[in-house]
Image 1 (cartoon, rainbow over the protein chains, first blue to last red):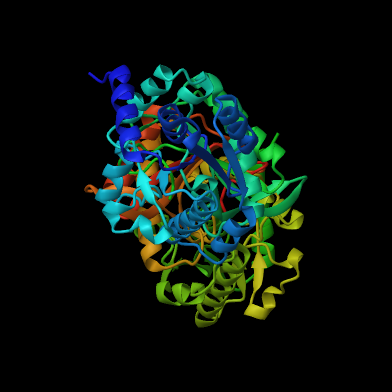
Image 2 (cartoon, rainbow over the protein chains, first blue to last red; image 1 turned 45 degrees about the vertical axis):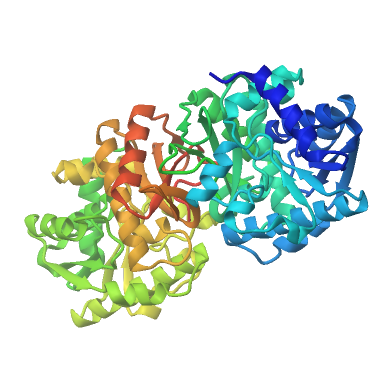
Length: 310
Length: 310
């Protein structure tokens, strides 16, 4: 049985030992993993830590503001990096899922490395958890924060990596969040992938497509708040389909809604959401987003699907 | 109130008047519209009619055999044209929905025109119904059997067109089918588009992709037989998604299942199919088709979607 109190106590000692008198930077996306990591390290080393929020242009509606505010409320020094244009530039012309992940990862580490050099920092803290490690080793996906085991030398980017949660599964991470007294908005926060909405735009990632999937994501989240699912989100297809808007034929966008139950993201079940809710989501998405003519619901468990589409 | 008996009686006279002593050819796909048309004209002119089944390689499992057998059982002279390779050749490199429809239509009329010339025939009978006429005029889709109104001269292809059902809506066509004593497999047959599975393969149509969507279609039809819906089918996306097969990461195919209720195809409702049925379909499709990792269910009414994807 996992004991969050003991875990925090041991981690604090260990982190202090490793970090010593060095300075530490923590990339925080606002997800439960990276926020717990950031708060844990902050508790261990105080102002030797600076948190960095990289705005890659791929975050959900209102998320950049929320994350920065939350971190500052916790008394953590926080640096906001606007890298939106740089990220969209690296996605240009890339349509393959793995190529997109690699482009994201590379730009992410370069951006973070630059921030680390500016702050004269040698350690980077990351919110890697057990499921990320397992899946990357098995080759299911290349998680952007698991480097060594896939043969990427973090020193290439100019720093060392510290991953205090790498032995924990998601439910234990949430226990640590509660133990650290983090707000419920964080401790119960739905998982959100590192490469963010870029995984949810099939084909090339462009600012225009991100606007569409961000709006659809907002609608899905609003309409499913009460369902208490593990994860729920929208995906924008690259494929188009015919539809009718204002009596005219259009060739428009397709959105898939994915809502799953899971303990630890290693396996997952497609939630059997009441049709009343699904139809309302479908009507809102096709009604509020001009370019969308069709809304699909993912009825596949993991396996054989993954939770995300890419 | 539509009276099928009167309709048949008047149509027989009218068809005999128009056809006179000429010979007639009827393109029959096995759908209710074209089979009723064929049977009606056969009743009017007997052996002056020859039915043609064009095997374009885009038909459902077992369909070519079923259609030819059904027509011959009705005593109708039937010609089977194997044009599979020719059709796949015209789809090569075409990814746009409208371009694909046009390519299909052109190849279809050329194939039929060739058969008509071989049989020295001047009249071609077609199963155009009211919904086809309405939708083509409104620009929703270009129905392959509605020519004059969109400015295509049928004589380009070497014959004249006869469309005895063009004033009828689908429910009336079924009444005529029963009036003519056609088997229930025909009179209650689910609508199936002229360009067949080519509309259900997003992106370029290839023999390999048709095999996948044909198998998925068969599974959907088997599992939804008892639902008595207006239409139910599978669509193969051009987009791919990640999944897990035999413990390995794969980048595989996506199938969407579409099941709708409708009176006349002009509007339609996505059927709220019990999850038990959907999950079984999803498990079978991802289990029985190696390349498929993900199964989606279309939750959009018409409008704003159309029934078909293209």
